Image 1 (cartoon, helix red, strand yellow):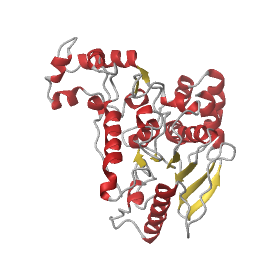
Image 2 (cartoon, one colour):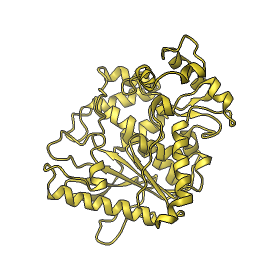
Image 3 (cartoon, helix red, strand yellow):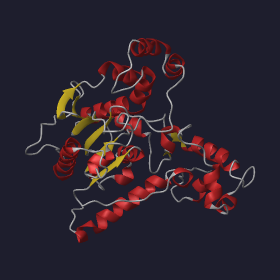
Image 4 (tube, one colour):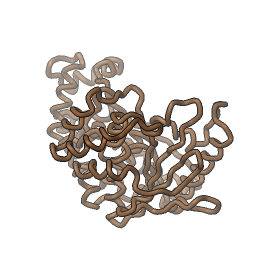
Length: 357
């Protein structure tokens, strides 16, 4: 049984303002979109039995920002007891920087508000008088300048601490986790840095930057991972942040499984961001997909369903998917040859990423 939900996005879902904070009974603002998700999970808890579902066996899953949401919900006390398992596809808690403090989020909100057309220092009343079109027109291009931690705020209510800090300390919710990404995790509209050396030096401390630069400069363009600049962006944005979150989760004694979708859909250049979603839902309706694609989709759906039922993706007729552990970092590759167990996904690259965070 699958329940889908809508939640507020952009400035509607992740906007802090001092007046919003003051009018809140919890003295918090900025995580409206996450509160929408928690409200939906509470609805499921109260009502799913009426549809034949089990409120004690809920799995949440999402892709991209949805995967990020699955991960951060595991660090919110408001989500405790609302789900038992989480599946994340292409998005971990370490994403686009660190979550803002409430004070910094309010300052950022004030600067965004001043660009809305409601005056230099608009009140909530003035902002609420704006039309949806006016708000959307003032919204920044989040692909070019993604907000810190996708706009998340450490507000003291939804998130008492940074989600990454909660995971690093092993204090996240004790739920089963299945988490992974695609090999060439390229987001449309995003471009690799023109100067990889400068980008690495701007991101890492000097000593780590030197070793990181040597590693990527020694890399060649890879059919699966792209150019060295693309590899770096994909590693720090998706692959290695997934690895780090799973290391934290497994070390805390939780059940964890990792995957990488290595198969490139036919007639599509690489397996860029989101292109695994049709396989998960079995919606390979285009004639470009062949029998091998349909077989791979069936395998993926069986693993996902098994995990949702029991917390273990394995089942009859499926290649064994080993549990993830911090030492071997075993994972399952979904490739042209089907599902194959491997270990140590880009370990050298990801070790440097983890050392820097």
